[in-house]
Image: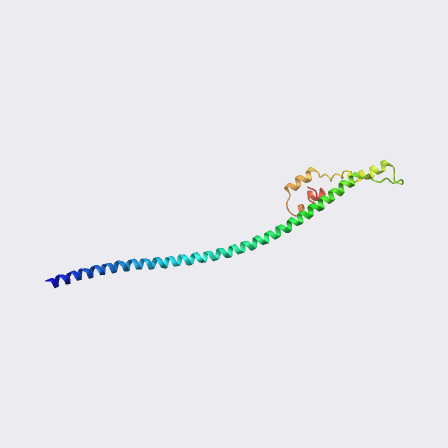
Length: 158
């Protein structure tokens, strides 16, 4: 009877060990799956970091190009500003100097008339009759194409 009791106790202990082994196997399988998922996530993160580094490198290169272009434009603007200041100073000096008078020049009235000549008003453009304008509004076809446009009659001005 003692041997049967010990065999039963040994059977119960083996069954408990088997249950513990099955539970441990499930946990290890879950850990392996999690480990694979973790390894996959780490590899994706590594790839994303590599892409980010490549993007940062291209961004740095673009920034350097933009910086050199901007520096060149700033230098050109400085030179243009200096040139403009020189021209402004020269114009101010020219305004301060009186115009030289020549003894052989024409009287003052003719000089003023010569200076005012470019300021004369231009001749007025020809005026079209209202009938022709009304005809333009309602005509279409080849007859209209033969007439000059309003812009051509007004000298091309708007």
